[in-house]
Amino acid sequence: MDPFDEVKEDAWSQVNGLQEFVNKNRPQNETKLDFENAFQELQETIGDLRQAVTISEANPDQFQLNSNDISHRKDILAQLDAKVTSISKQWSSKNDPHRPRDVTTMSNRISQDTHEENPFNDSNRLDEEFNAYQQQEVIQNQDLQLDQIHQTMRNLNLQATMMGGELEDQGMMLDDLDQEMDVVGSKLQRGLKRVGFVIEKNKERASDWCIGILVVALCVLLIIVIAI
Image 1: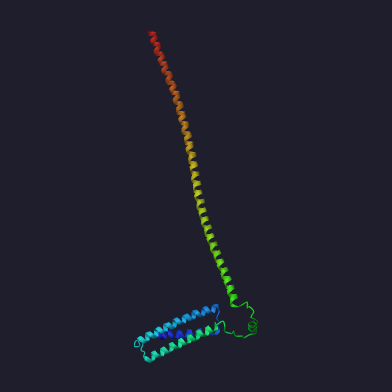
Image 2: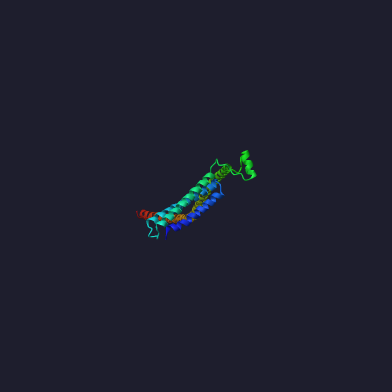
């Protein structure tokens, strides 16, 4: 497909749109930015068109072109360049601060004669926009700080919840240990009572054995004495 025909219609469409924009608007902050964007886009399109002419001129047989076709395309490119230059000059002349302002209404005529400050001029509007931008930036910074504080509070709440859960688990473990200590203490007391009972029983048996031994010893001594 011929690259020239693809770009030509788009270029003329952008030129006509930019010309209509210049006719309807005056240079202000928003319109300046819009014009610069549209003008840059148009220049890029014309650059693509110029590249298409170069490709067509280098390979005329591929696109079935002759020298007259190439010349015609160069003429179209020259017309576009001239139109873009004319639009740029027209916009620059509107942007000239020394250019006399058109007086079309009584309010404009009075304002031009008295040179009073217009509350709706660009400088006031820029100040208002700058103040609004500063306020918006301050609000955004405050929102960011509040979000950080909120996140910090959530982290602290989560940590406190985890600590509370751990303390509750440790309290339950201490309760279980206390119950186990009570059971062990009861068993130990019962064991001590049994040991004391056994000791008492052994004491009584030892006394009986001692008495028996003494009785036997006395009987032996008595027999010896009688025998003598």
